[in-house]
Image 1 (cartoon, rainbow, N blue to C red):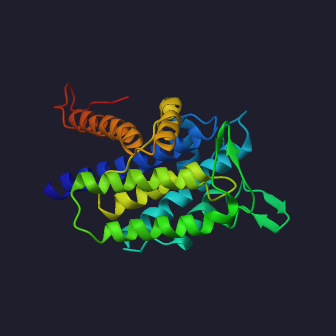
Image 2 (image 1 turned 45 degrees about the horizontal axis):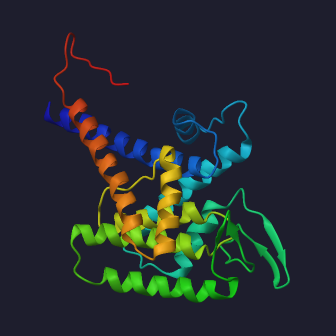
Image 3 (image 1 turned 180 degrees about the vertical axis):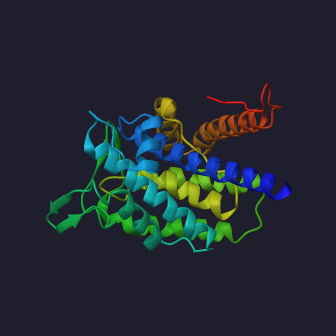
Length: 260
């Protein structure tokens, strides 16, 4: 009886973890333009079935993100030290099936390999650092984060570190594509390293997310982005509490309760 009870709850934990990762996949790719719903994302990851009438690239983006997420979490939980090469590996997985080849005066750059950009890029009215500064800026960011991780940090400090690396990698924009997804995965890397719940940037809050990045860049005040991410994290934790409470409600009738 005890063994059956433990097995049941172990399965609940495993299923919950699986759906949490799929939720991260869904929202992160949705921010970048994927049209898949969360249910379609679940079916794609769990059963390998692509949704009818949706662009194939959207499904490829989701599958690549899931592989990159699993790689990122495995690296963090194995105690792998953050490095520039690790960030490039994550980006290579993110862009594995949807990356492009860019021909520049400095040669051909294949964005499926995690190679740094060799040209200047912008997003709307936002311009990112010159390409010739990318390598140095990324290496400095890694050094700062690694040094920070070697210090005794409170839980709040750990979260702020994860939020800061997320923002700064976006601000550097070291790759031709996949910068947002890679930055959010890097945030999850820090959180997994400290065994914290993994943050999600909810796709429905995309406008506020971009605004927080822009405000932080314009003011050079990290609290703008941290405040936004704390709001997302609080919403996530409240959602987790609600799910836990639902799972532990006494069942009625014949002993089964269904949650939708």
